[in-house]
Image (cartoon, rainbow, N blue to C red):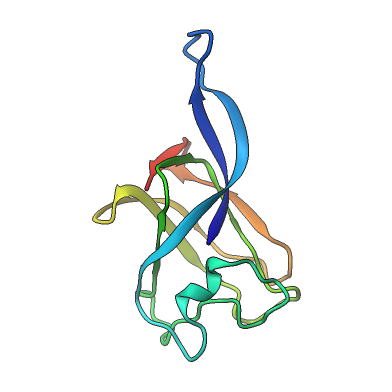
Amino acid sequence: GMIKTTQRKCGNPKNTGIVTDCCSAALHYSIHSWSSWSGVYHPNNILEPKPDDESSRWSSKSNSHGQFLMLKLNAKSIISHVTFGKFKKAHPCNLKEFKVFIGMEPNDLVPVLHTGLTNDSNSETFRLTWDHKVVDFPCL
């Protein structure tokens, strides 16, 4: 699977103290763990973007707030944005509310996003923030 993010490469050819070479890149990831799934909507369905396939989504068994997916990046990265793809037309299962937590260890995560998706077919990109400050995050 891939997460589309803005990734910073820590290059500094002139020793100016400034991080350079900002780029947008798709980061490869796997599904680390999940709370549950419903029917054919297994977490692995999100590993490949398939906007034409209505079953290309994860759905939990429950509507309770404890539902989660934990993704693991295939390489250490510094991320500043995350993009969520969607089905090619509006769908009632688009997330109305969700949170994103990131970190280097599964037991040491910080909240960086609390929002919801617009119920349409357009991908949405969100800036990650911590304590209402814009920062880039190392994560695994």
